[in-house]
Length: 245
Image 1 (tube, one colour):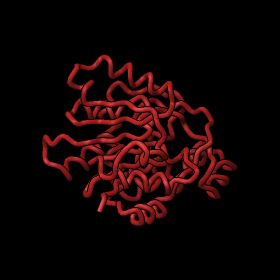
Image 2 (tube, helix red, strand yellow):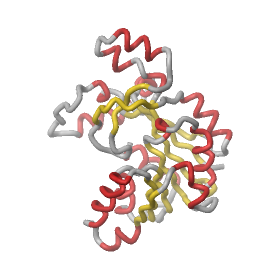
Image 3 (cartoon, helix red, strand yellow):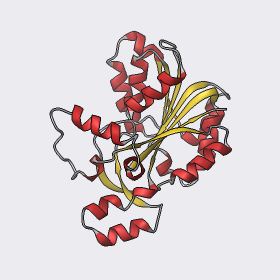
Image 4 (cartoon, helix red, strand yellow):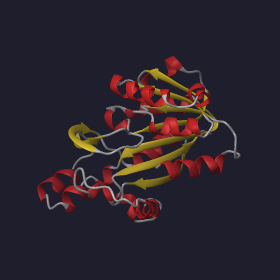
C-alpha cells in the first residue's frame, strides 16, 4: 500500500514538494511517520488512546526535524469539519477506518471538504466482493455462503490500519463495494482516479504465519497482482485513490 501511495503522490506532485498530509485513523502512525520522514507536514488524527501512545512513543525517537513536521491529534474522523478548514490538506489518508463506520458517506464528504483542489484522497477499505474468498479457500463452505450474501458485520483482523501484523480478534466490521464507493466519490467531488488490490494472496495465510526472511518476492507478487485484473478484484482490501476536482 505504501508503494501504491508513493506512486500516486509522485504522479501528482513535483519531486521534493512538501505536502500537507492528514492521516485520519492513523493507528500507531506507521504511514504518518513514514511521510514525515520524507519531508511532508503530517497531521495524524486518532481516537484510540493506546494507538496515540504508540505513535507518540515512535515519534519521540525521531530527530527534531521530523518531530516538528508531525502533529498528533486526538479525534474522530467524523469531526474533520471541527478541526480543519476547507482545503487544508494536499493529501488525506483514511486507511482501515470506514469498515468501522456504519454510515461512511458523511465521513467521506468531510474528508473531501478538507482536501485542496487537485488533492489526493487515499482510502483503504474491506472489499465486499471478496468476502467469501478466505472461508471458501479454507473449506468453510457455510462461511463462504454467508459471506456471499452480505457486505456487513463480518469478523476482521484488528491491526494498525497503516501497516502491521494482522491479529484476528473477531471484531465485526462492514465491507464496501467498489462500485458504490466510486459513485460516492464522484458525488462528493473527489472522483476515483485509480484503484488497487491489497492482500491478494497473503490474506489466506494462517494466523501468525511465519514471515519470510526475504520479503521482496512476496511484496513484488502482491504489488503486481494488486494492479492486475482479475486478481485485484478479489483482494481482501481495496486501495482507492480519488482526486478533488
